Image 1 (cartoon, one colour):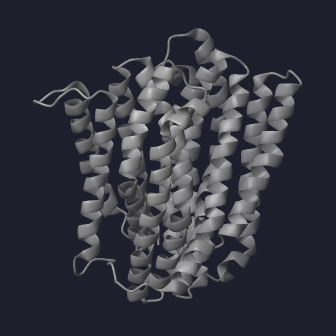
Image 2: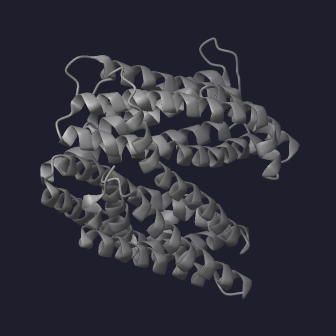
Length: 434
C-alpha cells in the first residue's frame, strides 16, 4: 500500500509545485511591464480563486463517483461520469466565462482599482474568460484521471504545458520571434494556449484504447445528480474558505504595510510545505473512494492513516526549517528588516502547525473521496470561523498585537486537525452513500 500511496502522491505534489512555478514566472515577466500590470494580474488571480472554488462542484463530485466505480470494477460507469462531467464543465464555463467577459471592468472597480489597473486587468481577464471552457475541462480531466489512479500523466502534461506557457510569455509579452509585443494581453493568451495544450493531451488520453479511463458517450442523469449532490458541499466549503481568506488578509493589512508584506512573503514560503500535503491528499482521496467501491473498508481506512503519516513526516520536517530559519528564508524576498521580522513571526507559528495541517489536508481528502463532503464542509467552516476569523477580528478591534492573530490561526489549525482525526477514527464516513 505504501508504494501505491507514493505513486499517486508524488506526481500530484510535483504538478502542484509546477503550478506555483508557472505562476511565479508569469508574475516575474508581467512585473517587467510595471506595477499596474503586476497588480492587474494579481487581482485576476484572486478572481480565479473564486472560479476554482466553483469548479469544485463537478471536480470533487466526479472524482468521488469515478473512484467508487473504478474500485467496484464498473469502468464503463466511471467513463460515463467523465462524459457527464464534460457537459457540466462546458455549461458552467459558459456561464462563468460570460459573466467574466461582460463584467470584467466592474470586478476591478469593485475591488477599488484605479483606472489603469482596471483597464489592464479587464483586458487580461476577458481573454481568460474567453478560454474559460479550457480551464474547466482541464480541472475535470485532472481530477478524473487522478480518481482512476493516474497522476503521472497529469504531471507529464504539466511539464510540457509550463514550458509552453513560459515560452509564449517571452514571445507574446515582449514581442520576440517576430511577434508583436502584446504586453499583459500576451500573458493571457499564453495561459489560454497552455490550457489548450492540456485539454488536447487529456483528450487524447481519454479517447485512446487501453487507458485507465475513457469517455463513454452515455449521459446518466442519476450520476449527474450524485455528482452535484456530492460536489456542492465541497464547493461551498471552498467559496467560504476563499472569502474567509480575503477577510483574514484585510485584518493583516490593518496592521500596516510591513505586516501585510511579511504575511505575503510568509505565505509564498509556506506554500512549499503544502506540496506534500496536496499530493497525499490526492492519494487519500483516490484510495478511499476506490477501496470503498471495492467494499474493502479496512483498506480504505488504513490508506488514509498511511497517507497522513507520510505527509506529517514531510510537512513536519519542513515545519522545523520554517521555525528555525525564518529570517534566512524571508531574506530571499526582501532586505527590509521590519518586513523580515514580520515574515519570521508568521513562519515560526506556521512551522509549529505543519503536522496538524498535514493531518487536515489528508483526512479531508479521504472524506471527499468517500463522498462525505458535508462532514468536511461543516468541520472546515465552523472551525475557521469559530476559532480563527472571529478571534482574530476581536484581537484586531481591541488593538492587540498581530502576534495574537497568528496565535489564533495556529490554534485553529490544531483544533481543525484534531476534529478531522476524531471524525475519521469514528469511521462513519466509510458508510457514506453517493
